[in-house]
Image 1 (cartoon, rainbow, N blue to C red):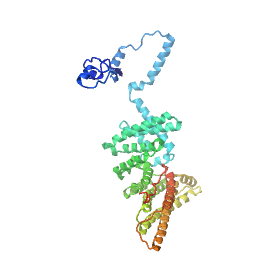
Image 2 (image 1 turned 180 degrees about the vertical axis):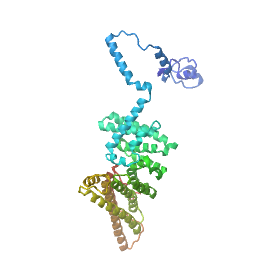
Image 3 (image 1 turned 45 degrees about the horizontal axis):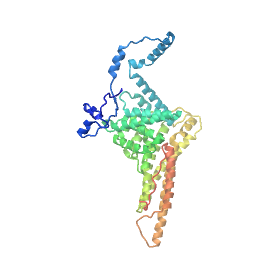
Image 4 (image 1 turned 90 degrees about the vertical axis):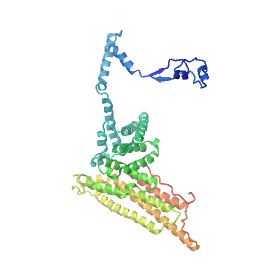
Length: 463
């Protein structure tokens, strides 16, 4: 409890435990010692009165004599009995109330998932361990970073849905505590555990939902990328590790776009893992057609940040890029587009089926028309269309760039001037940048991620 020191001496003498002469404004003892007297202001200090209070109330009788009328006294006793029944859990098991609150928070987290990710109930059944299975399994050893991340998201979601500013502020406070615990655990051997990665992903998800965090999620996403790379592909092949990777991979692609670099998921050791695991899941997955299509689309989508970065590098380069290099890049994009176009045709054919026979593409037992409707509503369909649109925009940009360079080269030859440097035209750069941004906007909308703002194309003058 809070107490006030009873001594009237200056704080220096009180701390030294000597008698103060109490001369004002400065005591003579401090002046003689040649030090500055801190004065006589008295400050609060904390004193532990736990044992004294316990002994005091143990000695007091449970029922004190009272002059309260019998009727009022009976009402008070009834209320006291009800109160004792309410807190009986704390009497016999002090941690029971906290555990119940924790369970309630975990179930509220399910409401958050269903609200922000409507398709969660569909694909969660296709995983070895889904988010709710993982959260419900967490016991007393659950890291504080994960606990506060779950609380922050659940409380913030509740505040948004109910329009409760107090709950939103409370969610932000919980997010701050989660970040502190995450920063601590990252310095320990537990940094590479599934629980740590889960906490990082949930806190990153909070940053995307809370507008007050602005673009902090981009930096956070970079940290998650380093964390996943340190864990390696093998840690994301099975169980909750795979669920975590699938949950956050769209944002990893978006972060690669923002940074203007290739996505690490494009590397063979990561992409081959996705293909092999998809084949294994399809053996027991009743939605195998859509599952395989989604994985195939993502495996092609993950190449797009690299295509975007290479296109920007060619446009910004101060040296003329060899036509062979440009042709090689266009060839890769054309290959991706061809594979996705064939898949798009297959999906379109399935979605237009209107017979009442059982679909051969799925083991769901749905009629073909029901299956067609199910396929048409899948997020992978809009993603596929957006990836195709982005590839078209990038190839148009390269075509415009080559046409512009050819005109400049022809003019230089006519003037008898030969140069290896690539002249920049600001109007062309603006047009090229607009084309690429148009494709990025469609892509980010389909990925259900914050809008991707492309890095402006630089010119020699700007550098």
